[in-house]
Structures are given as C-alpha cells and as structure tokens.
Image 1: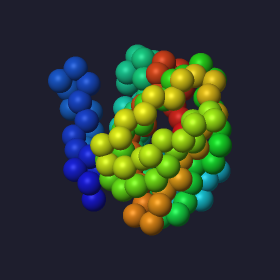
Image 2 (image 1 turned 120 degrees about the vertical axis):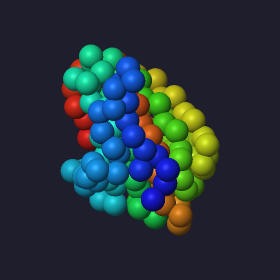
Image 3 (image 1 turned 60 degrees about the vertical axis):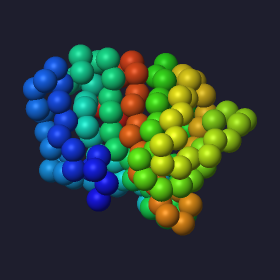
Image 4 (image 1 turned 60 degrees about the horizontal axis):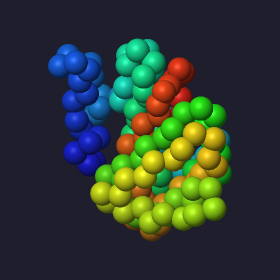
Length: 129
C-alpha cells in the first residue's frame, strides 16, 4: 500500500475520509484497472474530481477521451507509458502529465503495475475514468 492509499482527505481543513477506508472499484470497461474516489465533484462544488487509479501489471486503460474536462495524472508508484494524442510519455514514480480536454489518451502499466492520482477539472459528474 502506498502512502497515498492510506492518506486522509481534506476539503478546506475538514477531513472528509480516510482513503484506506474507501473500496477499490473495478473499472467497468478496462480489465485490471481499479479506482478509488478521493474527492467527488459534489464535494468540490463541481470544480474537480480526484481519484486513485491502480493498474495491474501489464494491464491498461484503453484509448478514450473526456469531452470538456482536462485530466492531470501524478504517478505515485510503478512504471508504464501513456499515449496522449500522437505522443507518448514515460510514466514512472513522480511523473506528472496534463491531458487537455478532447484529447485521446491511454495508459499501460509495465511489470511493476502502476498507481496514480487522476484529477479531472472542471468536473460536473462522478466518474470512473
């Protein structure tokens, strides 16, 4: 378990949950991908939606895009590769990547698996990715 998976989540100084208490949810479209909500769109006043994303070794989030939402990734564990539009980005611990709205993208974990924070903004709905 990474430090982020066990972290407390705060909004404006008020603790809203312990990340360790939230359950991992299997992604409905991508096998080997799990999400855990940190801050929902309603909790943030529709400003953003933040979640932990866990990708099992050699699994992937397939190519997709998110309309008017930008997406920010911060890799907190593991290694992999993201395809963002026509470009590729090396994903390893500490990497940060901004995916503009309406941009096709995918993420593949290598042998180590990968855990990242994904933040969507502006967010008007709860998401699963």
